[in-house]
Length: 575
Image (cartoon, rainbow, N blue to C red):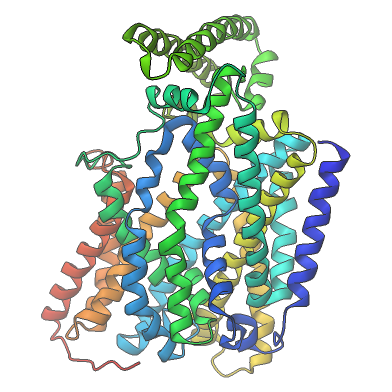
């Protein structure tokens, strides 16, 4: 990167950290450090909720998803508005009135200690894994920009963020989120403008989008009911609804956000911001990826975006084979570019021949990339190259947008985009670490190990716990960087746990005769059933989004059955 870009990145990061710490108050006691004394305005909490979602993993993973597979991923969020409305009417007032630090404290009041502990442990495991994926996303970018080892880049991002979270507490995290939301949206809009300006003079925006549509990149809604398909209207509306209810209602990283609001009404408003704005924002990010695909129809892209593997092959006995493929790719690109220009220029008057010529040329590119992926698999034994997202090798998806940023955008805009991605990453990581520390201290340490210490002691342990989870997430990140589309990976991790967690809260709130034995057994059975669907050969093709309702149903059936067998009991709950 140019020195100006580095200046933009450094100036922004210094400013955002300084300003976040400057607005930190009352972090000398546990309530102030973990919940900001429930004093934050709804709009700041709402932006923090959205910023945690719109993280670096979204910019890297979702743009790559849009490039490779088009707009279909937006269906994943169709259940979000319904989930936000349900939660704002139910769990937000419930948790707020209960005056709890974590969502899992209530499970002990309703059931017993073992149910609370198991639920919190499941959260810690799932969120710790997801935090590692969130670190891996910007590490991919930095490894390209600086040509650093991926492990070094992970440590360079994760450790300073852990230190920042240790110092700042939840208030610093929230106010940093507010600023990074503005910077992220500004960066995405700047990238979209650069992509549109980069179109050839003889190709209109409408014509370019027509080509994208012919390539399947603008296919947004699919009403097919197929459990093996991840992105359909039904999987998003139903499976996505359960996932969002679980994430925003049972995941401490989100519950802790609206517990910091000034009142119940302000907590509700903070969630409803996502109901109104999340889908449009996600569509904008995906559209950016689609426009990157369009840009590379007219400007030659790399054959494989992950140049680490290209270098490995260049130094192997198969170097000549790879060079031959690159020559074929260059020739195929010339043909696809000509077909794309012809198809785009014809507009609505294009005939079937122009469309067929484009599809044939695009298919040739896809075929060459598949052969290149097979060559990478043969030389490096990277098993991820057995799979693909859309027509792109799976590991390549995460490198598409970083490659575009660093090789195409003008000086200054590169720095802005890198700053946006790193700020998003650091803020999201900080939010996750803060919630992990909260659950560790409140649900595990204070409940089982040291129940009678002072707030000062628990505050110190919270800082140590933040550091531990920062190191844990860095370890996970070293493996996550090669797992394919990172936006899918993080949701796969979540879907493995979230359905069961949501199920136990449904038992707690809707079935008063369920006892602690039933709730505990339901959690275990729910996780077991989801594991079967995730890994058994007969059911592993069921899309991960359906794991969420499957987990809920399994917990309910097992919880009700075990409670009936063990006598059941009526427990009156109160907020």
